[in-house]
Amino acid sequence: MQTRWIVILAAAGVVALGVVSCSGRNGPPKFEGPPVRVVCTTTIVADVVTRVGGERVQVQTLMGPGKDPHTYISGAGDRRKLDEAHLVFLNGLHLEGKMADLFEKNATQWRAHAVTDGIDRAKLRHADVDGGEHDPHVWFDVQLWANTLSVVERALSDLDPAGAEEYSRNAAAYRKELQALDAEVRATLAAVPKEQRVLVTSHDAFGYFGRAYDFEVIGLQGVSTASEVGTAQRDALAQTLGERKIPAVFTETSTPADGLKAVLDDVRAKYKHEVKLVAGKNALNSDALGEPDSPSGTYPGMIRHNVKVIVEALTK
Image (tube, rainbow, N blue to C red; front, side):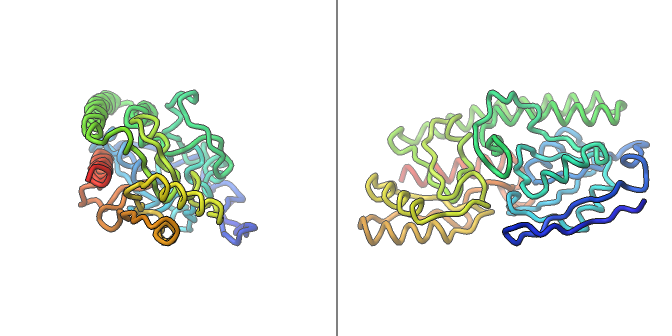
């Protein structure tokens, strides 16, 4: 039976794609040797798979640099990529909000693996987001994110046993690199005095960062960018910024800055306090890496970019 799609019109007027029949073949495409064709949902997930897979994998990414996975809508071209892949890796924890059900229904057909399945659920932050119960932004705790390597290594080795030794070697090397990165982050952030460790962002994506590196984190929007910002939230943030004289707020590459700009107008008018809006090339990367040729085009590069920007804005 040939695969077809139905278009589901959600209450909010958002269109999501759903599968109504099985593919004509029995299961995913047969693997006969490298390269392993892999599809990843986000650039952050693709970084892990690329580092573990090395030259034995060929990676495609559905959501490119700067894309917001919370509101991403799948298209027919995505379905073709998924059908042709030997393996599919997603973040999981409902980060890919509108695609979550699609992956759950087709986990076997697409050999789909959520990289966050390698993380102890007791270490996850609670959050009501897009039908899930945990905050999906685990990559902002570098030590926690290192646990995703085991999922990728195991899935690749199960499909391609001949490459198992290489996958194990690559994973071990990247794990060691991430341990060093975590230590580097802690050393760099030590320059920010405790009383100035307040990170205000467009949406609540940095909770794991705050917990791991001792920062108070405040997001204008909730954990998902699909959440609405009410007048009460806007007023509360303006009051916090004005009364506590917080010096800077940070925009994000995958989230519009309009909401934060409106809050800063309120702070200026009501509290006579000027807050710096960190934006442009200094915007934080939250849900996606930067362009491939940019300093934030890799996961370690993204972390270093964010930390550098935070330190400079909160210590000047």
